[in-house]
Length: 427
Image 1 (cartoon, rainbow, N blue to C red):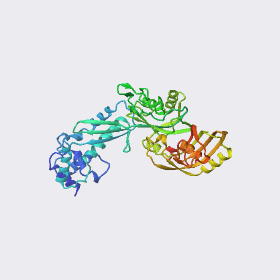
Image 2 (cartoon, one colour):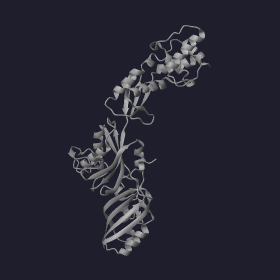
Image 3 (cartoon, rainbow, N blue to C red):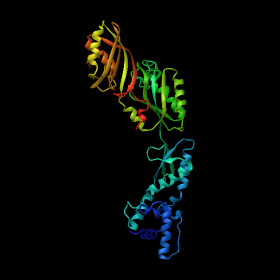
Image 4 (cartoon, rainbow, N blue to C red):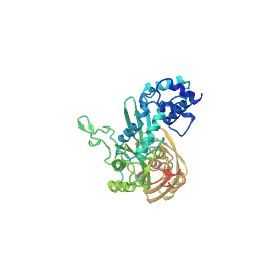
């Protein structure tokens, strides 16, 4: 159908503003706003039919009921809703009143157009308010997780502003033992610190099994600097509570919800965290990250290198130790869920590879063992056998009891090469 015929039929239905008129044929031309397109159509109709040009006041439009005159107002309201919040990107969504959607459908039916013709009212409202908001704030529109997301509810006369989370990536070293990665609520009192009317005996009333954690040394500082409402720590795996995390450290991401600040000095933030942790934990390589970094870090199943101090319950010969280590190196072990984590892990048998293994006998009953193994390999059980739950094991091959008395994680690395500090930022 000719666009002028469409316009003529539309104007016969009642007062239709330029924006609603132009929206009917928005898919047939480019580079104009719908209001400009509708005005041009109205002028062309007047010339074709040799009639006087009669503009329509948007407030009288039966289709949008004057809503198309309110783009500037809504853009200003959106800007007010995020006053004092730092952001670089945004997006706008709209909930039109059901009556307007019905009016729009009626207009299309009256002029003989199908439902897919032109452009929906909601799309125009999003775009026009968005353009004006961008001019007001200097921000750029983004359709892929913007810093702020607006939902304009025309029926309720409300604008909802959602400030999306921001993310900080880095690596941490844990330099003291008996510090968990994240807060560890007491299992007995479920973190309440109480058992009935009395303080919990298991945790001393604190609600937690450990006073400190890597999360508590890092996340609150980031939350404070970015002026957020909550911060969550995400790590690339975790080491045992009693293990040190050394070398280049373990990758992590801290997610800050509803931040009012995004453009922070990460070098200064890194210094603030390290000063707060006071030698218990160190972070390095802090930088701003994106939403997808959380899953990339959490799903990263890296190989790791460990150093274990091992105590035997009988004297061990150096040659026998070397032979046992040689047999374990390069093998695949089967590990049934260890006793020590059986309460929180599924009871299954896992297969894990031992890539490299060396051992030095310090004394007949003491050795230093280094292992590079597949992600998820239980090192303590590889040494002790865990009552036969891990096969083969160092203890099983030697025929003596063996226990890891100190464990250090030396590197979180890729299987074939050292882990590059900026790996997560390489495309």
